[in-house]
Image (tube, rainbow, N blue to C red; front, side, top):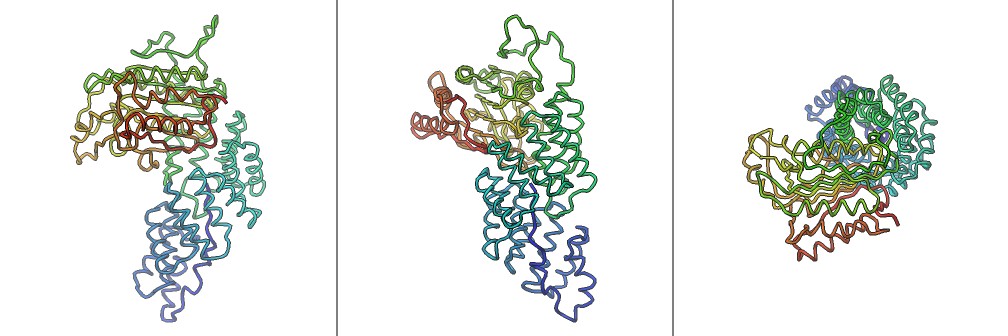
Length: 571
């Protein structure tokens, strides 16, 4: 995810022209306006120049730009944006627009960067750097065709741009073209064998192809290179390369079944300070996968009891008493689903329909070939155990579906699913009694499978009063319905290859229904098994049916970063 910087000479011309300030120029100018100056010294020198209050217009814009560069080195993107915006106000330039757009990108925002890169291109001649960075933003939005077009433009202007070959390869991988992706990544490595980033991306490709030994070898070499010579380009977020190297090698170790080495790499991922959205997303995945890998490496009692309310549905071959396969042995083409329906709540209003909804959806998924783990009316311990078992077993699945029906609540913008035994009480530990939806999403965020997450979990939120009663002193707010996924800075992530669907729009309340099923789940179970119906088309049909049956009171909502067309029921 490397960003590039327009040649800094675009803004440094005619910086110092007043003879009376020769001493200030000699003492402060080089420190403020030299790329290799350590960031704290750079920022301090620029601060002193600004404090002189003798520069105006383009000269002052240049100082703000360089101070933004120093802050960018530290990963302080909010201040980068503020300084770059001031530079643009004083004198718009390609470099300032590029720097601000890249800072927004590193915060996990993509629409504003595209606008900034567009404005930068309008100000000057075609720039390979800006085409490259705009390609990154298109890729962040999931528009891989536009990303590839921008990388093509970059390569045409700069045929030896290793990072453009690398990032074009990432976009091709996202579209399912693993061979094309591998060719581009290999070219990036040929152009610059000292770069760790292309090796990290090739690690992901080998893992997607099931060649785990090559994945581990490339990950190890990338980590060695990143430690030996940390990236010095000011547009590379601090520590992002090393974090990426550790997480990708850890995922390869886990897929191989080497949980000890996987755990070591996950711990290494979490021990590094992250500044950018991508690194925080990697650490969120590492935190969940570390917990799962630790559980997997522990001995499992041979006669462990089945959780109350949970039905084991993984098929067992007749005449074969072998245990269920570990993630390392799971078929790469396997399609798995986790289905939970909670209605028999002890301390809040019971819901009659979620168990019926879960059974209907589970049957529809089994009918189209999914291996389904389903649970009805699960308490916290059983729900947590079943979720963790599914996340572990889904490590090598090709498609993973998660469906939940029951009560759900958002607290401080994060979504929680409610076990049947939870008694919500005001207090800072209140959310610990619930299942964090972000944890499920992070656990599936390893970028090698399609994830479909469906939540009919906004039912007549009876917890809002209790949640809100915790008060603002503890930073907890209760709100109706569920919240839309945001960036990892707010706790949630919508990783590549993921679709998330809610029974109703964010912040709205879904209906439980007057019949045996909720309006949403009734429509879902009818359409999910339609042969040859692409998943987003399927959800469009579900949405139309729900809107009609509820007389416009409920409008299902979805958000997608899928990497291509997905068919749950084969054509």
